[in-house]
Length: 70
Image 1 (cartoon, rainbow, N blue to C red):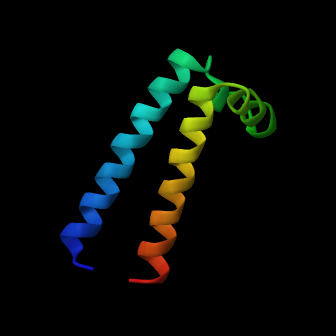
Image 2 (cartoon, one colour):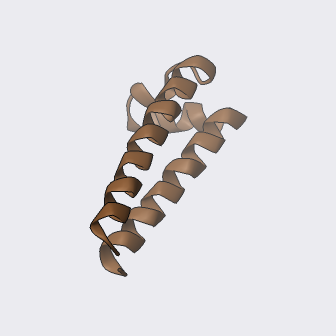
Image 3 (tube, rainbow, N blue to C red):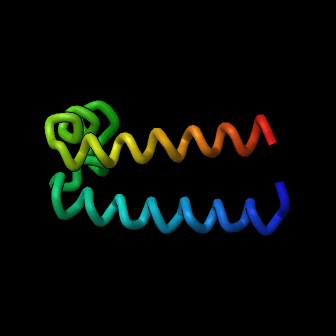
């Protein structure tokens, strides 16, 4: 993978995380900022929170792929 592609992936992940934090604060009541267990339980009880967690899981998958299988 080229350096430019890795930089683009990094910038996209940062932008997505900022958007996810905004969605979390607006729709899930800041569940992601309340602590690991309590926040995850709050997010799983909300459809928007479930979507946020799925996107975070996808980001983790992309990072693992970029780091270990490039």
